[in-house]
View 1: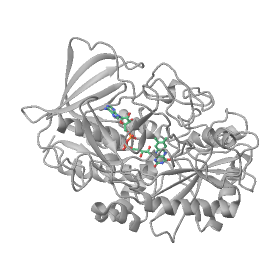
View 2 (view 1 turned 180 degrees about the vertical axis):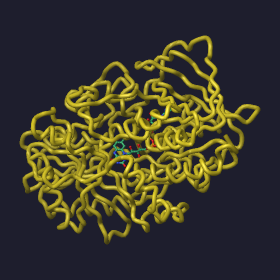
View 3 (view 1 turned 30 degrees about the horizontal axis):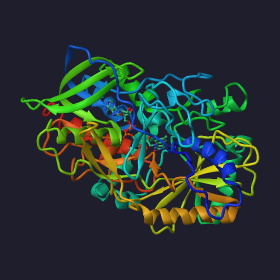
View 4 (view 1 turned 45 degrees about the vertical axis):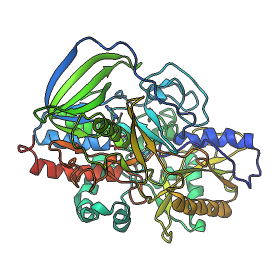
Length: 545
Ligand SMILES: Cc1cc2nc3c(=O)[nH]c(=O)nc-3n(C[C@H](O)[C@H](O)[C@H](O)COP(=O)(O)OP(=O)(O)OC[C@H]3O[C@@H](n4cnc5c(N)ncnc54)[C@H](O)[C@@H]3O)c2cc1C
């Protein structure tokens, strides 16, 4: 997605004047494209097959687990420091290019959309299939479902690419423990990420084309709802969008059919930026379809990873035991937290901090569907999500963004409008011995104060622009911005070092407690990783590993 959404329309707004079936058809499928809300997201199927009798042993200096924003930055900076590095990723490597058919389309969704489940993980879509190592996992918790990426490139493969840097004050409110880092981040780390990902906003001539009518409509209405409109920085080569507009390429950006990846390419995702540069040094090996099951510490205080190499159906092909001097956990907020909660509960690593499994938050995400606005939204909605609005007077900082929907239904216009903002990391993860996994609990109403403010903004948009707003998450809260679980200050230091444990690092979204200053998280995750890796290379290289 984008950051987007899926309206699984739990309950139409009470003032609805259009039929429920009509709304479900358009909004649930339309808006849903972006995001993923998750209906009926069950547990992912466990990997199957009899484990091979022998275990392959490997010895490494540095291992990175996960290839998203944290993992990509870590791999590149280790390689540039001359460190031979093994990068483990559970998902597949997906190659794109003009008119490629790499990723599934929203309308013909198939098992490439979901991580090892026999059913769709997008709300409102009732499809089953043979499990496959698809791009999106729905991690079902108590009171919240966390959507996350499963691919080489992590969440950058299916995200819209909204790349926002928080204001200093909002960063400090959201992540007070790291407030003193902001000036440094602003000076060089955020700009480094922006350069690496080649971010830019939508050119005016593209915004002026027919597929972007819904974006222009949002821009027109936003100020009337008290929002300050802005163009969203995106990691996009716009020549690909131009190619679609001239008919050279099949539509994917211009219909927002990007929820499971961008077939045409032109997206500067982590696999083709940070990871590609890391691999070009010759020092980095990226190993897809390698699932880390457990992390332990041996008698010599070296790190030991139990890894399954799987096939695309999830069957274990090889078991690998990797011993390493340094392990950099970048499996994303759910992935890293699950590994560390398991390690502690099973006694695989002694004296892990009590704070592991705390400080989790949803970044305040909420997906709304704007049904039948008065203005002309066009017959297709171009993406990625390129326009948004900030609420300068809001008691809790929040941002609202319009993301296109790939499915249009005659007679109903449904625009996805996403809101997010600052929340506390009130969520916790606990070990479940039956499944040998950690389970998330999000207290009911933990983000209620923010959601009231987001709801008021959404209603203001409908009041100004006509139609009505539906909170698609009302009955089934979900987030695509999982943050926390291994919080800075309590579980790791500001450089991501796990407290009390040399050579074990957390550099992904797991270390950010709850939210990223009313912005989508990817840029802050990457900038913090840049900042930490500079310190790791200066202080720990040659001493710790
Ligand atoms: C649909 C969607 C849309 C989004 N849109 C936006 C957006 O527009 N802008 C934005 O800023 N953010 C967006 N996000 C959020 C963003 O993608 C995440 O915040 C970001 O990717 C997190 O980075 P990370 O490094 O923490 O982990 P991730 O990018 O999630 O990477 C973690 C990687 O670790 C792998 N992994 C997990 N467990 C294991 C294991 N046990 N063994 C091996 N590998 C493992 C995963 O497969 C994954 O590739 C979106 C997310 C989703 C799901």
